Length: 94
Image (cartoon, rainbow, N blue to C red; front, side, top):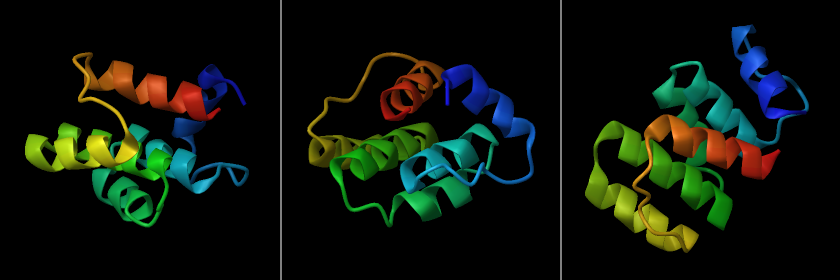
């Protein structure tokens, strides 16, 4: 799947079946459902899950919690926009 196809899939009611959990979390966030995205992300116990979790808490405005999750992901808090980071994570996972 390409980034454009992923973004186009946001018009659907549910994520495409072939998406793994990290991409499902980002899909729900792309749909504007932060709560569902967070529910999925908090159960992903990998550095990728930590990166998504960090992004979601940054989006929420909880920078101290985001910093914790970025550290667990082995990443620094980014200075780009939330939209840019969302696309960066999606592209990295596709």
